[in-house]
Length: 309
Image 1 (cartoon, rainbow, N blue to C red):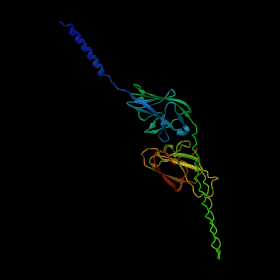
Image 2: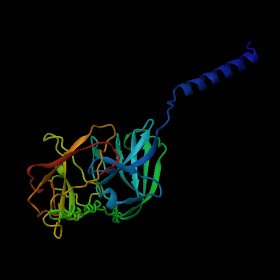
Image 3: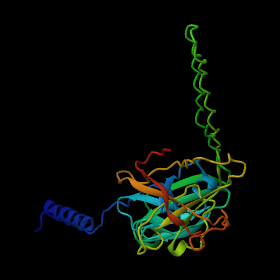
Image 4: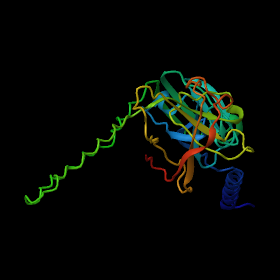
């Protein structure tokens, strides 16, 4: 004879065992999250700044060769980009970029002038499969307005001519010598003339050798040798000296620059002359850039990430 209380104990034990088995078979994990969006200059592969809600992207300032990177944290298998309601791309590996990349060499995309909405959604699996994590959605505006002009550079002050010495009094009247005339005052120094660049542009080798960067906001100087195609860059400046003081006794080239990576060594930047004045800001490329003439006219080390003259 089976006791009722024993039958109840068996049922409870069997139920508890089944619950334990179901819990042990579950895969418990948390999907990561997209923590922010970063605007990238695809021409230089450098970050142009955070892409934030309500922000403005000025193509005259950051350039037209752009990309966007989704920064993620935690376990993420893929990130899906949705621009203005349309899925643009699903990235399966870092860096998660809107217009894709090749080992960190960002490809350039384009944003039309106007308002846009961009969402980056993380998923547990590749190709946008599995559980979705925490996304980031940003509404921003693209404009193409010229930046404010820098303040004019004042010429160096001109020192006044030295005062003339007092005349020399003649000696007592005993066969006095002729009076000594005071020395003539020196002529005033010449007037400095400020000449701004009439054209400026940066050029880049490799796959960018035929691409014009005349509208880029920054100009770059980089020389890593002939073995690294696409990484060497030159900056070109052209000046119209019509109306300047003639003859000129000296000239000073003033540039505002900085190093783009903190902690790096000082970089020697040299300036060369060129007899070719036919190039244009909108047409010059690495392939057709003018040749330099002779040795450098001067060089100066540039250090630190803070811009300076």
